[in-house]
Image (tube, rainbow, N blue to C red; front, top):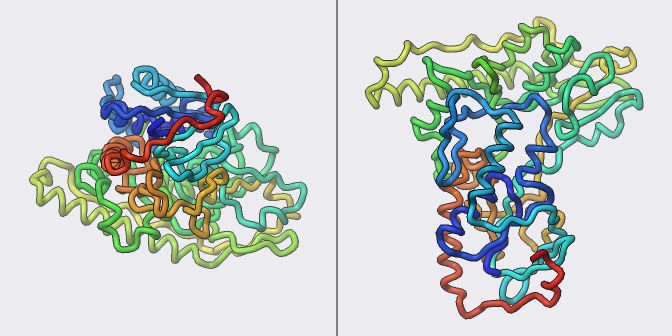
Amino acid sequence: MTVLVIGAGHAGLAMGHHLARRGIDHVILERGEVAHAWRHERWDSLRLLTPNWQCRLPGQPYTGPDPEGFMGMPELIALLEGYARQLGSPIHTGTRVTAVRALDDGYRVETDRGAWRCRAVVIATGATQLPVVPTLAAALPPWIESLTPLAYRHPAQLPPGGVLVVGAAATGVQLADELQRSGRPVTLAVGEHLRLPRRYRGRDIQWWLERAGLLDQRFDEVEEIARARRAPSPQLVGGPSPRDLDLNALSERGVRLVGRLAGLSGTRLQFAGSLAMHCAAADLKLTRLLDNLDAWALAHGCHEALPAPERPAPTRLPTRPCLGLDLAAGEIRTVVWATGFRPDLSWLRLPVLDARGRLRHHGGVIEGAPGLYAMGLPFMRRRKSGAIHGADDDARELSDHLVAWLAGQTSRRPGRCPDRANAPA
């Protein structure tokens, strides 16, 4: 086998498309079903943050009836299933990778259905397999329900009472909104966040970001790429009708805003006094972005054809910031940890991870492991890399690199793995 792709989400399928076009023999391995994470690790009401017209895959633009709508999970799963069926790639579902090891002439990929030997490996498992939860979560009182977005499905699964949502990126604000609408009192602990309007001057914000070229900004054009890759996801929501979901929208609905969760002393939660600072920083970044978009519209001759520029109101802060809550008072019954995710690469038996357990890579080319690639990571090659519509360009360029690397390795073709007979046919 020449190439093994691990993961049959949109990133792995996109790579399969480009490998098939080039006539490179390959197999895609998937631990569960196609689009497994979208099926089993997302809450029921979730919709994509990007409009349907951006749900394009290599060779397949969106052609549905609602380009300005936002796909829910059933529609997205059907899209990926249909794409996989017409893809010229063999896909082995129900095949969990347990180890990847280096060989002199390639890699050995071990699975629960046998082992494979290949010359190159593409890791397309994404970056959201494991929730990042602070250590203080283990010290919560036993009567407090504690869960992550991977386990959350709908408000009815939570016990009665108030909810503390920790984290105000895209996941946190969406869950805070849904839980508040269900009739529960919600407190939102806010740290660093990225504020964006759903629409600006009559267009979806994604239209602006794409047309202005911001989504195509490359990783080697950014001074602090490590920081850019850690940036929180924007405060956006998809739904039947466009609406903003920033902190102002949430506070208007009754969500209580507090600062970043800083500690737990006994039963008392402690919040940092940094709420005003984080909100001011998000407001400043938003103003700068909209200024740049207005300048782009003016420079490209579409300023006059669009509605006049406007600026959202500054984030409204509580008059008396809450710096602590005693869980013994019974006000909070559930804590939802919307504090980010990290990849699960525990099966990778190669020295390619940094101190935080993330791949060391240069635009998806893994450092120190020739023939090893990644797909679908945040800001991997471009700002749009982690999105569905970002997979095409990344897969095209990485397949170019892979082909060139294979051309230089033609004299190092591996034979069959000794236990290859145990792998799926």
